[in-house]
Image (cartoon, rainbow, N blue to C red):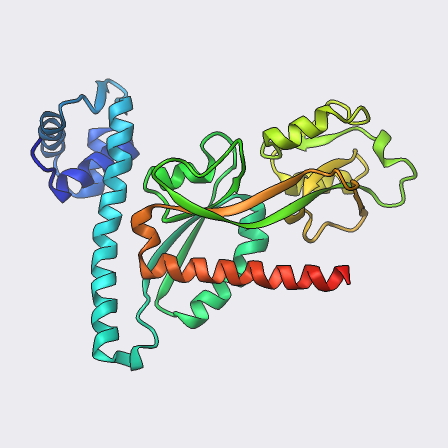
Length: 309
């Protein structure tokens, strides 16, 4: 197969994103015929049809989805190549004493509670140490392919994700666990028998482990209220609409009117970690972020140990 050119990769990614040749052409500043010609040339080189053409646009085929994901990742590596080379040159040349050679955009995918409660202190330290880093955080629901799918599709350099036996780091990616958080019962403050209340839940609050644990608890009813996210769950609980079983990150800043009760020694836990590509894991920007994430984990571990003393 002949190698695809960077411009051909940009066209594939743009058509997949825009779901059409005309819209992709406008984004790229090309004519529609040039975009169509580029896609046909790429399909010949790859040996597969990438898009289903129709009156409503161009929908990626399964091969097209795979090709677009790889195209985004390769294009991102080309961007990283320049930043990494400039950083290495600055470090070897002693620019700024070699103290700050980490710069460029940093694309992060995170589920809501991680974006709200884990990332802010991490990014504050990261950008203070490396003012040249430009974080872009995208909140993604942790359902289906979740945040890891953003890395696989080339839309994120690193994802904060829930990890475990049922959701390990996918083949071809690398990652690590940052923290293991406990689930707890949150309910209207002062309620004498909170376990008798209706259950409020949301789609992201699910792993096979927690669901298995729930199935073994005869006091947990079927959810009668479904919310969009964990923030909405907390507001509903604070209004007396029921109780919820939630992980630690979701319970940060629980609103007035709620009370948190431990679930006992057999309570479920959830692992939160990071996932990235092997190539991005070697980049200065992602390495700097991982260092700060691990520092935050160590800081939290010290705080937890002091609380237990």
